[in-house]
Image (tube, rainbow over all chains, first blue to last red; front, top):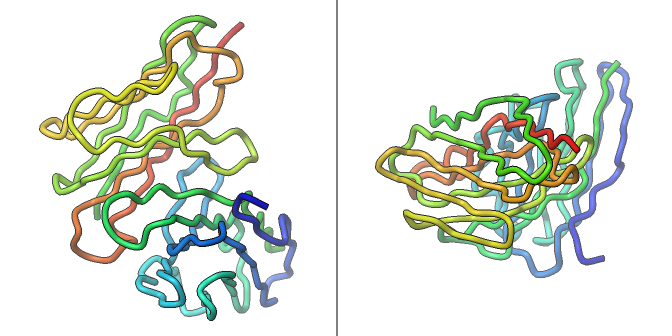
Length: 116
Length: 115
């Protein structure tokens, strides 16, 4: 496909369970971003990869959140011991460039996580 | 904490009118400004970006940037009911600090175009 894909689209987890969210960026895109979007809010930055390097993880809310992109393509966001406050839509975006000011990001459809 | 502010709306305009969406930002070092449209339950899609002061036009959309006033706006001419969505302003700050601090979204403005 031509766009960013994410899976699963919906995930219901019981409190305390671990979850893994997958992002498949646009082929050839260097940069990959993860965002968390609460209802009625704009996306909030979680972490950023340039190829396989995680250059910024300052937005990860706690050490229960972990992201990786081992081969510089597909990325996985893992949340351990999920809490109710983790319920949100998790968006992945990719961008062709790795540096500079032209961060034209293209978003995937998101994963809606509900923690019960 | 760098901030991006938008009026949450809803902003209601009649079909065919001009919709004006506004965004202000706190970081004077900000360099790039983006407008995204997000339909309910969907992901954001890029509409326009602007780097330089002044106007940039693309079809029915015009982005306006005034760095001195730290203000960016989006005008939608001949508004259509299909334009009804939330419009997100995103700002990339100066090339210092982490990327997370540099790419900040506003809360979005809900636009409703009435037929």
